[in-house]
Image 1 (cartoon, rainbow, N blue to C red):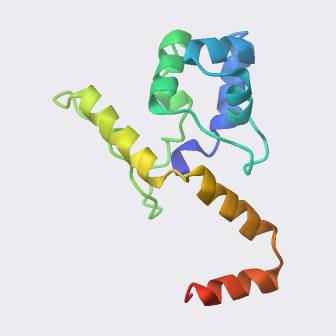
Image 2: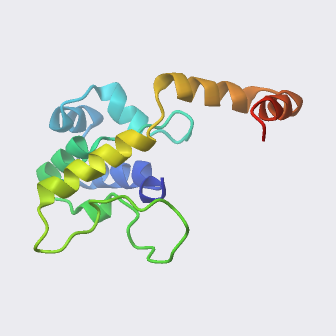
Length: 138
């Protein structure tokens, strides 16, 4: 997800700047401290991301603009999926845009089972990956 590539670093910087602990952020977002730790994980395989509600709670409570958390400065077309709700005009209804964004995130987010399959696929040998791709017709 292009918009969240550096979220883990930005969250840590904002948390440090605001002198907030992971426990503080967990309380703000109404999640467990372990969930906040996974948002900041250096290893991308262990990293998770906040939902729209948690992100907005974090922005509001820390008085931080959403673009300070997300990678929105790249305006070039990279062929990546453009998520609705990240940009809107004054005439747009923010709640509708956020609902669309949340639906799109849920649509592309891996289930636990899919994530486990991907983790196992990445850990297997090159020969096994080749055979799996052959079975899938790729």
